[in-house]
Each structure stands twice: as C-alpha cells, then as structure tokens.
Amino acid sequence: MPEAHRQGDTGSGHACHFPPSAATGGSPSVFVNGEPLMSAGDAYAPHGCSSCPEPTHGRSLAAGSGSVLVNGKPAGRVGDAIDCGGTAENGSENVAIGD
Image 1 (cartoon, rainbow, N blue to C red):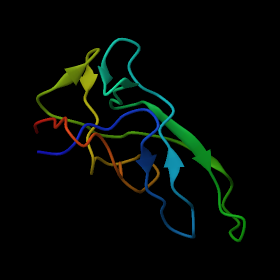
Image 2: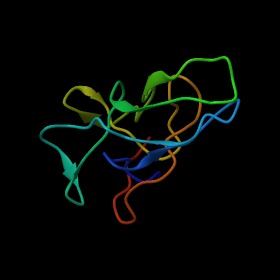
Image 3: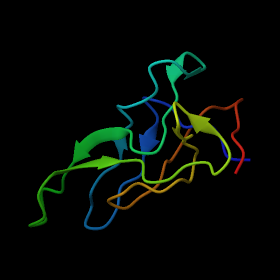
C-alpha cells in the first residue's frame, strides 16, 4: 500500500528541469503524523524552469485513492499523479492508504 502524502512532502519535478516542489495544500481536519493529509485537488508550490520558455506554473494533486476519501476527495498517496506532470514523491513512513 502507498504511503500517505502530506503537506510539506514533495511533488517530483518534470520535463525541462522543472524542479520538485513542496505540497502546500492539505485537509483542515485530517492529519497524518501531525501534518495535513493531501487529497486530489490540493496544491503544491508553483515551480518554473529558468532555462525554458515555459512559464512558472501552479500545480495540484490530480489523483488519489479510489477507496479512501478525505473531506469527500480521494486521499493523496505516494505515486499519485500531479496535474502538470510528476508524482507525489514521498510521504509518511508509518501510515499507508489503500487503493
């Protein structure tokens, strides 16, 4: 089972050297190891690539668990997709969330 993905965990980079960025969203009422649990639609810090013509852009978690909901949205897990590319890269070492 994939680990729970929380505020402060990292979303991987993608494409033309767009770097990883931190998860900034999260549930106001569900916490894992003291950090808000991410769910589909929650934000990451914007990121950009100084050597590309592409502009800095915002990003959000695009997918989550098909069976665990957080405030009515799919719970975020390591490996879930981010809308601009990349995936939820790391998470809780002791809390896993099912498919």
